[in-house]
Length: 219
Image 1 (spheres, rainbow, N blue to C red):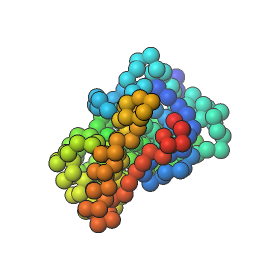
Image 2 (image 1 turned 90 degrees about the vertical axis):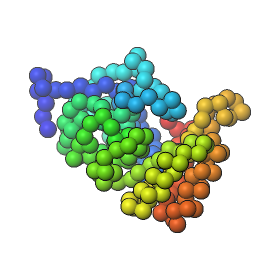
Image 3 (image 1 turned 60 degrees about the vertical axis):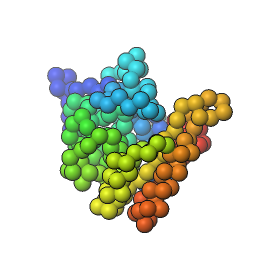
Image 4 (image 1 turned 90 degrees about the horizontal axis):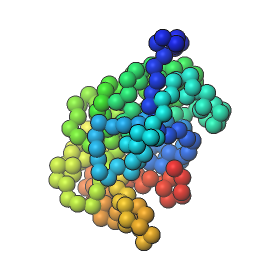
């Protein structure tokens, strides 16, 4: 895809870095993390609050983004679009096509709201927070539920039902602020127990995601 000065869109990003994927299927894989600013949802427990800070948002064009990626690591070819909520960005399909044209494998983590998942995305991690059309679940390569420490009957039923129809379902216990002795965020033990209960009840169809990057101090 080629842009001209008149047609080149820009994308509000709040962070761009290389690290290891710490969650679900691709745990341990090196990736670029392209974090979009803004989200239609306002989850109070979101562990990436930077996307809510207008001062952190910077406009990026697709060519400028590719230049930055190559400067950070010219050998790395995996890109994760995350947020915030990438689906809320206008002209996202053009960005995906541009990254693909330049040799990148493109993954996306999304809540499933805000827009249409571009067809060029290679891997979709769906982390549902609200009711969604079935087509969104069918598009997902993996489904990752964030689980807290309180009973949530609707979510519990949905997780078990989804595990019967989708081959790649994960549960991830929530990190909670102030749970560590230092006052920092830490794994909620009640949330972990609920995840283990889900796994036992699923007959092996659900797996555990533990945000391993946080355990080793990576962003």
